[in-house]
Image 1 (cartoon, rainbow, N blue to C red):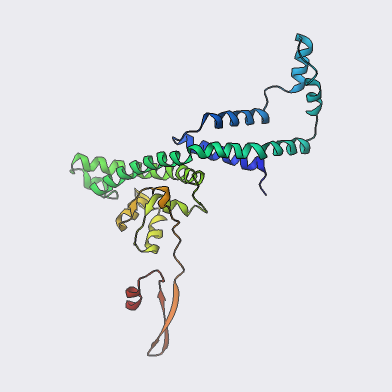
Image 2: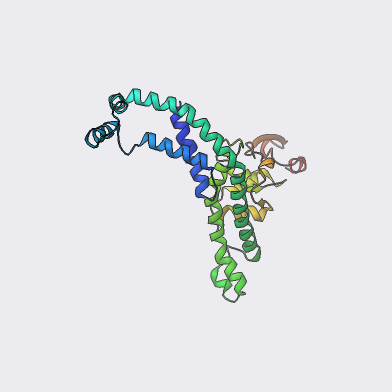
Length: 263
């Protein structure tokens, strides 16, 4: 089970992921985080400060019991730090929440800008066209062909920070399946085809080009409109009467009733 220290470190790591991607924190958050780090990794210990006070002159009354306390075993030290973390964690969480929504919106805007650049590129030219077939193409098409995989890689790189920002802003994020709903709007596109496109590793623009070909909108949603997007249910084997008995056939429960009837 995670301790309060674990939770505090996980929160600090999440916030760092978001700030490294362009988010911000409050001054109070940074001060609390810095003081917490100083507690865990002090530059000097009480015994060193006590010795300096004796040699150079200074207050020793408080430093002596502190130096004795520092001799406590690992279990005691861990217990004390965990007790401190019980107060530090909610304080940090409260400060992180003050910028969480704005941070998500910032990362969302960056993601959507990259998505728009990618869509423009793959609309202008097939990213999987052969290079030799583009030798006489307009310069704009050749540039779009070169840019497409770059934009696709940028989108992939932005996904984790976007997910962490959404979580810090209050979205319920379960597994990495959340990436799909946080970066696309599948609409009414066939669910199984959407997930197949999402998981493809083929092509110079990977999943993003495959999703675009399906008509899926690429872009992060406003957090108020975020909804998880479940995976498709398993294919079913059904039977129909044939000339020589029951004949099995496969049905996709994600198909529309019309598609089922045509099977």
